[in-house]
Length: 492
Image (tube, rainbow, N blue to C red; front, side):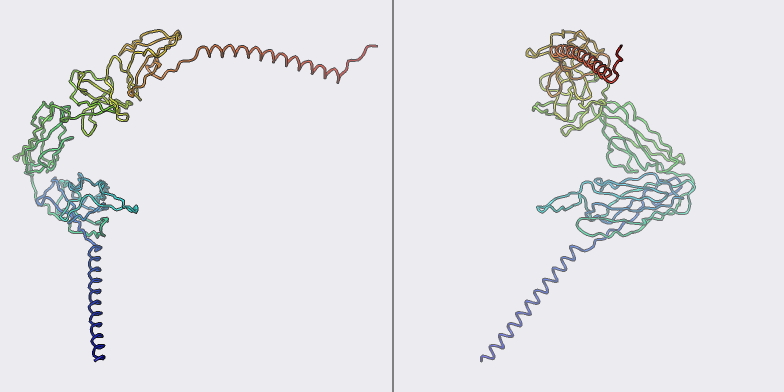
């Protein structure tokens, strides 16, 4: 009975060990499978794809270089794109619209274009132990256009034109190892001969504006918006065929509101015509709605459009600045750190104010009281009662040509004026009448100067007396030594 029990125990133990071993083996297998899945190499296929199939001499040919997927790539390249340089010429390069956060670098030599790119919006985080982790800002499991190459077929081209990828480069991802593989290229026969009937555009752009909808050669109606200050738009077009004639009309002398700009294209054969229309809206205001500015003291100012008849300080030109999150009109001058803005403080009438972005101060521009310097904006201010004006200075005025300064002059012709800077600090400044320069003035202590001159005269007299005494002493000593060494003969 005891032997049977021991045998049963042995069987149970064996079964238990078998189950445990099977469980451990399954766990190890699953973990190894999961690990291999996480760390498995990923593949990206890079190909060249043509947007046209029916091409002829003089035509524009657009080739897209695409990746079949984009698995969180932070940088890639160099991707080497090649084309038949004896059949087509290079026109332009455009990065893919999905990769707007990437910065591209391209180098062209003959029929070879080398392209690299880096994600400028990648996320870099640091854990508690100080280790950095990087995450890309864009990924896609669908096909992505990396970049497009625009070529123009030569007038004498014939046969076929080839475009291909010779090197896919490296595709780096913080999450996985990526193998980049070269896919298909493009071989297009040059079919058409004779005169071209193509009157479409291959590209249409408005400088400083975005057209809606996105350009398509088969869409002929677009719209865009420009700022109030814009009176002329620069239209950039590229005909699909080299010999198509283009006429642009209506892009100058824009009125407020809607303007019609037309691009008329006539094909080489003279019988095919396409007319593109752009509705350009010239906004009546350059200022975004509810745009405001808060200064260092918490005062709020509202941005306004400057009336056309308001005088602008000499040397200032209009531009656009991003202030407090708003893109607003501003006036700047070379060498002047502050910018000029047209504002309303809620109480005074609207007007120009100087804004110092570093100090966050806002100072109203008063032409008759304001001096514009390279480092600061200074305003004339009455001398407070507790500020002492030296006796040698008396009230005076000086006409600078643009304003009359009220200040003080002394008998030496020095002219000073009491001014306040953008930070509210007030002091006397010396105004150079010859060149108009301004510098902080420090009064000299006249009593100290007189005492200095008196002491100088006294010490000068003492020095002369000492020099005379020394001279006489030296003379007597030398005479004495001479008499001893060369005694005079005595008369007998």
